[in-house]
Structures are given as C-alpha cells and as structure tokens.
Length: 442
Image (cartoon, rainbow, N blue to C red; front, side, top):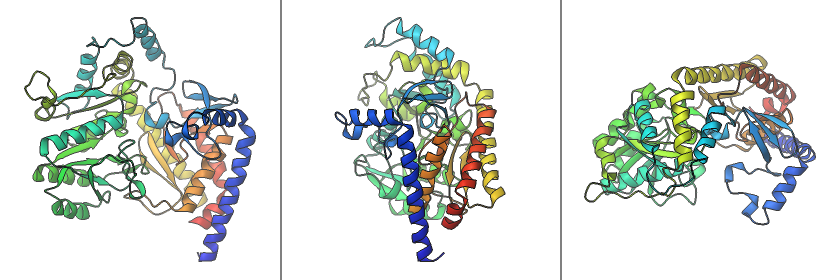
C-alpha cells in the first residue's frame, strides 16, 4: 500500500466514523441531554474515564440479566460485563436476595462483621498461592497495596512492568504510560520478550522491589502470556530478592484457580478485584504467609492498612454467595468454553471472507484486532486500526450490542449460546458492510 493509499483509506475511515456518529446522535437524544446536564457539575460529565467517547457516551437507566436499557429506551445485549466486573450479570436472583437481606440488618458497622472471615476462607481455598488475604475496594487499591508491601519489605522503589499493561487508574502503561501513575520508578519491559526482559532484570536487579504483570494483557488487547515468560519472571524475582506480583484482577475468571493455577505459578502476592465482590465495589491482595503476616495487627511493628469500606457487608455478602453458590467450577468452565466458542466463531467469520481480522484472548475475555499479524505483546495503536474499532463499536450499537469501544468483549454468566450466535451474525454483517475499508487497511 502506498502513502497515498494510506491517506485515502484513513480519510474514508474518518468519513465513515463521522456518518456513524451522526446516526448515533439521532438515535440517542436523551443520552446527549444527560451528558450536557452532567457536564455542568462534573469534568466532561464523567467520573470514570474509560466510559467516555465522542460524540457523547450512551447512558443506561437499568439492567437485567445480560441486558441493558438506555435512557432512550433501547435494549442492548451486554457483551462487556462492566469490563469483566459484571460476571454475574445485572440482576442475579441470589445476589439480589442476599443484598436485600444484608441491607435489612444495616449498612456500615464500623467494626468487624461475621462475613469477612468467610469470604477470606473461600479465597484461600480457590486460589492456590494464598495463605492469607486482605480486602480493599478496587483492583487499583489492591495493586497499590501490593507495591507498597514490596517497597516496604525490600527497601526499593523500582517496579518492573510491561508496555500495554494496565493495573488500575494509577498504573497504566500503554503508549508510554500515564502522567498520573503512582510515583514509583517504573522499568518498562516488552511483554512476552523473555530474553529482553531477563537482560532488563539483570541491569536493574538492585533497584527492583517487585515485578507486576498480568498473565494476560487485559486492556492491552487480550494478549495471553507465554507460561515460560511468567515462570522466568517468577524465578528472576526470587533470585534478585524482589516480589513477584501477579495481577489477576481480570484473569482470575479464566480458570477455577486463576491463570496462576493453569500455569503452575506461586506468586508472592496476587491482586484481585472486579467480579469477586459479587458485583459490588471490591478488591483484594494476598499471598504467602511470611509476607502477609506483616499486616497482622497483633504483631509489633505491623504494617498499617486502612480503608473504611474494606470489609463492607454488601461486598462481603455478595462475594460469599458468588463464590460459594454461583461460580462453581462447572459454571466457570462452561462460561469460558462459551467464550472460546464465540472467539472461534468470530475468527471464522473473518477467515471466511479472507479479511485481516483476528480475535485474541482466552475463555470469556477477548479483543478484536484489524490485523492478520500475530501479537505477542500490546499491538501498536495505529490510527486506521482505532478507526475500524470505532466503526465496529458504533455499527454494532445500531444492532443493539454493547461492548467496549476498544473492541474488548467480556461474557457474563447470563449470556446464552443464542446471544453469542446473534453477535457472530451481527459481526459478519459488519464485515460485509465494511469489507472494502478493512481490505485497504490491512
């Protein structure tokens, strides 16, 4: 493809996106009105950056099962599951029942309750690396506490992370990192680059307090890690006296014991969040007894860890019901098989048309990429690729499917086989409609 072809294709894509925006504006006037009203008192009408997009974000007024209803009254099938947090759907009857029962007894006690120990026991039974665990309010907090622990125990401030990694609102490493990242000394490696990362570790061995890694890049494009790469990181951390921190905020749902169990890993600390609070605000970090015992308040010189809502009864109760009654091993395996089948179906639609489109991921988490090139690390954010993802997003919104604008998909338990079949069919229609643009972008 010549430079002129590239310019013409980008121009055609921008025009197609502009037309999609116009159609979207016409279909969603109440969402536009909500945006305007909220912007009077919130910066950009927003308090969660990932939810914003031009020309204005869709606003929802209710959810049930795997469906969402917009402010304009349209019903969408939810293929995003609140960026993996909504694994149980929007109204699981046992979780709803439990929340009503808990609320009837009061909201915030300001003391210990009868639930936190039960949830901790379920965590330690489910995830093989956990001897002890503590709760937080989000995955971001969990990673903050994991790195604070590593720094306190090692006396170092360096953290090995990876391009494309996302570990919460203050730990984002796409495109050179975020200006509001927490003030650690970040050493950024290339994901799945075993030799290059080993050399990086050797060069910075005396600085590194922790290696922080996702066993599959989540926001970075659903790119699975090679098991050998993860084991190298674990072994190297032990060798240089650093902590191996595995971020399973997203990936713990991909295997009954998390991806750490699938790969036979024993991280020093694992961070959790998202769905594990039964849909309520939630986070956790835990690991080896010798590390976590530093937070034992009965010990002299214990590390402090505060948080008013760490043991809030809503998250504790919903988390217990979710792990003990709903998310059985059989249910989780079935969900991830459904995800594998969906990903295979989407890839088959692209292959049938000979288009340079691929869907990467594992189980119930996946991302669409407009490229035939295989990825072992976060793919480059080329303008044409982003424009095609934008077109996919808006075209499928018109067909009443909800997923991430960055083309990420996360299944929830209520999503059924017929929902997946309908999504695959809609994806096929998108490929037919936009084939010329896709062909000229590859």
